[in-house]
Image (cartoon, rainbow, N blue to C red; front, side, top):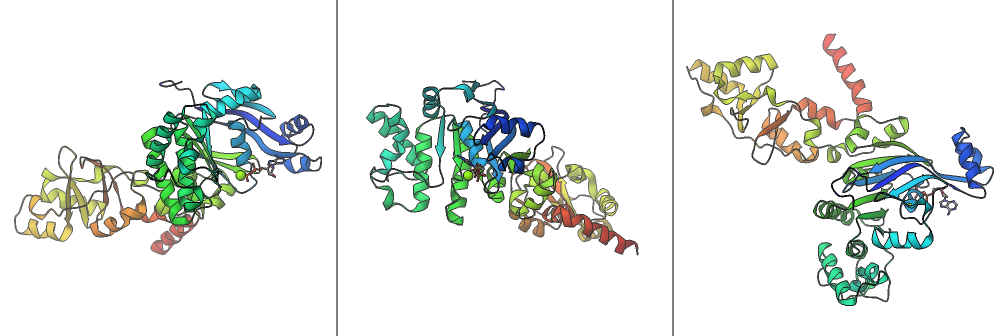
Length: 412
Ligand code: ADP
Ligand code: MG
């Protein structure tokens, strides 16, 4: 185990997979700049070209790309079902690309489990036996197997279903059994190839939520393959974007949304539901614009006119959120000789840093002021001005035009 060290769980270096006769020659050609299409004429398919990335322990790493872009080939090199034509694949600190079949089988039993799109359940066995199958292959005794299988079924919400047959379960439940089987195997690394792609949208979302929860709880390293960018963004700590065998960008969902590496990625992200992907902390600004509770009415008036806003968020000297004040009330108080902000303070809801923008919108509308972002103890972490919120929700490729246009109108 490489616990506590910086050793990545999975490490891929300049990996190639070319299918066809004399595949190594294909690699040489690719290295010297021959385009992938030309190899086709010689009967060679370059499925993965020069892939390099690390997956740290306990990360959900998503490989995303259209059908045929090389995702399954890449993941099959990680569990040793395919060996790379060139380059190296390291799992848990060991280079498996030179392993023989026996060593690979043992890696697949002990270190890596796989969840497939079509569940791959054994129809004549019970749900419990299916969940314990990886352990059976490994020679674990029956009572241990059954205990581990039951525990895993409970984790995926199938407590009590162990005695049923797979065909008595819905599609979503069958995929939970597939997940339970991988969990029961107790491996550090889980590979999931389009595991949720065959599920109905609502069930799919449930499974995504459950996977995130399980991962936070169990700390597995997960390589998750999908062709659905919304799914990639929801699940991935980081995402590798693949196109025609090459990884064209690796980054967090925010990096990919805000700095797409090329036009191809930019095209892709136009379809992303930004309101569900972006979180409050990714767009919040400094909390320094917040008003100090003891700074008084005059200071409030000055700050509002300087910032040209009609409402301000107020925090105490310890940085804890107190509420908002509104311009009309501040002015009225000043005129009637008041001093303190306290009497005109209105309660305000602070949002959590990991809230999706779709969930903060109602609060932003209700607040009128910038939206406060707070931690568990209501300490102010940042503010989201309304204009910032709108800009974040707009597609960046169109918003730059829009803001240029707006400015011209204002100037004219
Ligand atoms: P994805 O999972 O992204 O849909 P794949 O990795 O399955 O992509 O396939 C990438 C390319 O490699 C495709 O052109 C596919 O036809 C080809 N390919 C995959 N497996 C084989 C194989 N065993 N023999 C020949 N070509 C293959
Ligand atoms: Mg595939």
